[in-house]
Amino acid sequence: MQINKLYRQGVNAIIVDKDSNFLLVQKNTWQDNILTIPGGGKENDETPEENLFRELAEEIGAEKKDLIILGISSHNIEYDYSIELSSKINGGEYRGQSYKQFVVRFIGDKDKLIFTPKEFRNHKWVKAQELHKYLVLPNQYKTHKQAINEILPGIIQ
Image (tube, rainbow, N blue to C red):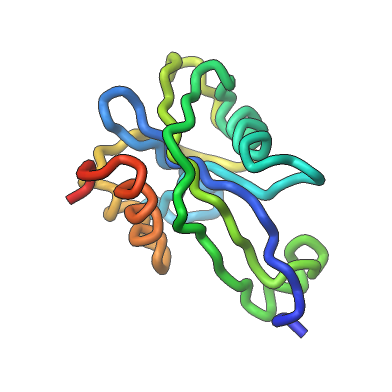
């Protein structure tokens, strides 16, 4: 029964540069106008911060020295998998995902980032006012906007 299963824990990284541009990535299987933010599930006994830095190293080649955690939002992203997906993802162990949202400042050289080709086919740095154009999955923009406004008040009107 799905309701008795736990949520897979993980993190999302809302990454903003010094010019207030946000990093969005496009998964290989997604349509051109649908993007998301980097992140992923927790491994073993990782702390949320360890999970964050591991995922960003794996997914975009970011080094810890190039990242400053600005805050962790009180607005987690939490959702249930569909019944069909529930049995296929992570061996059917979880009912869905619950991800902490970190807001992180990138202070490194963008040209040194390496986006994992097995996972992503594109990336964009966009202004806060453009996020709604790309975060189009159900509740995606709303949830990320809450986190951004909590940690960086006033950046999105």
